[in-house]
Length: 230
Length: 240
Image (cartoon, rainbow over the protein chains, first blue to last red):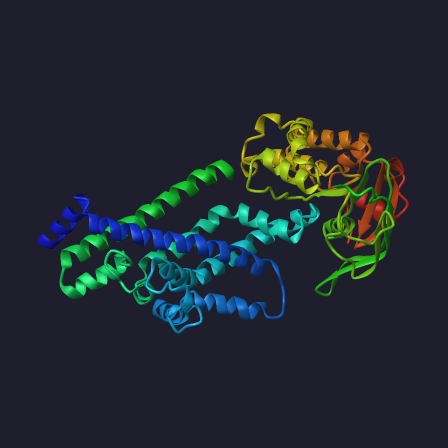
C-alpha cells in the first residue's frame, strides 16, 4: 500500500525525472508508429491490390512477422548499428534514433498485415464502382486507404500498443541510459530489479494510463467520424 | 482530359460469357446505337446483369468480340453504370460527386459548380453535406445516377435502378432517366417492371437463357410479340 501511495505521489507531484522518461517513451513510440505507418500502409495496400506469384508467401511471412520477438529485432538493429556493423558510421547506437528504428521494424509487419486485410475487404466492395469510374492503380490505392481510414486506426493502435509495451528492443539498442534513452518499460525493468518498487509502480501506472487514454481518444474519434462520414 | 473519342455504338459480336462452367451469356450479338432508351427484360438468371457488365467492359467475354465506337479498349471513357446496389464512398454526397468528377478529368476549379448542378438535377441539393452512406435507398440511387452523370456519358447503363424503391422514389428515378435520355444520353436499362418498359422504352431486348430472344420497338414488343417465349413471358408465365 505504501508503495502505491508513493507511486501516486510521484505522478501527482510531477516528478521531473519521471516526466522526462514518459516524454521520451511517447516520443520514441509515436515516431515509430508514424514512420511505420508511412511504410506499412502503402505496403499493405500494394499487397492487397496486386497479384503476383510470390504474393501468398509474402502474406504468410508478413502475418508471421507480427509475432517478431522484440529482442531479436533489437539484436539485429544492434548488429547493424554497432561500430563494426554496416551502418556503424552513423553513430546512432544507444540514441533515441536507434530505438525508433528498432520499434519501426517491430511494428511495420503488424500495421502492414492489418492494412492488407482491411484494404482487401474494402476493395471487394469498391472494385466494380472504381473500375467503372476508370480509377487507375495509384488512385485506387489512395482512395481505398482514405476510405478505410477509420478502420486503419485500429492497425495504428495495435502498432502503438506493441511499441509502447515492448522492452527488449529499446533496452538493447537504447542501452537504458539515464536521462537519455531510458523509457518507461526499461525503467520499470531496472527499478524492479533494483528493488525500487514505488518508482516502478508509478511508471507502470502511467504507462497503462497513457495506453488507455490514447485508445479512448482514438475510439472517440472513430465514433465521431463514423457519425460524420458514414 | 477527355479523349475526343466516342463509346458508341457498342457492338457485341457473337459474345459468350462463362463463369465456373455455366454460360451466363450465350453467343449474343447486338448493337447499341444512339437513340431512345433500350430496356432489357427477361426472367431472373437470363443474364441481364451480365450483359450490362459486358457492355460496361467490367467483364471480358470468354469468346466473341465487343467494340466501343470501333475500339476494343475496355477502359470506359464516355460510359457509366449504376449498379443495382450502388456502393457509395465513405464521404459526403457532394464529395462522392467530386470524386467522380475528378476521375472524369474535370478541373478542380469547375467541380463545385458541377456538383451543385448535378445535385440539383437529381433533387439532392439539400443533402449535399450528408454522409452518402446515411442516405435512404432512393436517395443513394439518385446520388448514384448523379455520380454516373458526372462522367458526362454518352451511354448510361442502369441495372434495375428501381428494384427496391417505393413508387415515389421510382418516379423520381424515372424522371432523372427520362431527362438524361432527352439530353441525348443513350440509356440501356434492365427491369422487371413491364409498366416501366411502357413508360421509358424506345425499344426492348428480351433476354432468355443468356441469349437475345427478341428485340423490337416497345409498341411491337408489348402488343405484337413475335416469339412464343415472349408471349409467354408477357402473359406472366414462368419462362425457363
